[in-house]
Figure 1 (cartoon, rainbow, N blue to C red):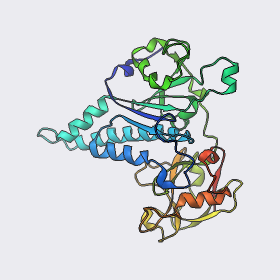
Figure 2: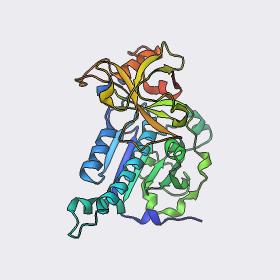
Figure 3: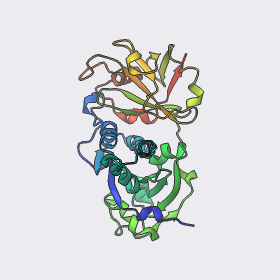
Amino acid sequence: MKHFDMFTRPREATVQFSDVFGAIPGMEHHDASSLYDFDAELTAQVRNAGKFHDAQFSIGYWPELGDYGAVLLEELRRYQKQELLRKRSGGSAGPEHPDVLVLHTSVERAVVAVVNCAPRTNVHQELNLNGEEFHVAITSSGLEVYAQLPYFRGLQARGWIEEFYRIPNDAGAWPEGEQFRSSCVTQVRSNTGVLVQEDTAVIPSLDLPIRVAYVDKFGNVRLECADMGKLQELLMPGRAVNLEVEGGRHSITAHVVKRLTDIPEGEVGLYRNPADDPVASGPGYLEFVRRVSNPNGHAAHAYATLIAATGVDAAVFTPDVWRQCALAISG
């Protein structure tokens, strides 16, 4: 049975992560300042303004950033709902603050996400396919995500997908042979007859125990761990651990701390971001950071250190490496 009520909500914002926008990030990713920090923009946007607005972000040679982006949007949606409950729990007798009303309106409306990287390969040509099919997920917070299968991994691993549908290429969602499908894919919100209910079992799993998921403009790295429960003992603050790169040149010794400021000046550390929801088991993120007093333009940031550990020359490095590069933490 299909349940399409969620698709009828007015749209507040459409947030798109795609390889078709702007300059292509990737060839300069050893220079963290060349990265566009969409995590910071979206987080500040939602926490300061209480709502989402339309945005487009390039994911270029690192399409897995879109997987991270989908998880980030879901986390921000959850934050909104928790914040609304918190602000209303006081039970003030007077009129609600205008900011609370803005937050309420945002929660009631739809945030629509697109994650797109769908090159047409020789296999698609041989099979007469118009690239990989899009799917759409409705998450437990009500977020709508339109993407190819690999970019639902993070949401699925966390158990956050409530409804899941396939959008057949030839079902009439767009003109036959349309090459720019990502430009109109969310219009199926008003054309739900093309949707085919799908089992989430078709979504790929998180295949690396620890992977490089995201890097901010200061070279701070977000590591996605497939099962935080396996790392509990190693992540006790106060100890030192080794961050190992599969097939790499050497391991990196890092301090395990509670927060950024606990890392000694100039050294690297691992910690769970206090802004993240606590995770005892299953997927979660760790921060890998070099603390310096002035992070702007600091060349020896954590990401540069991680690249050096791979043994790949930074001059020719691209983030494609992270697709198959497993990391590990040892005592």
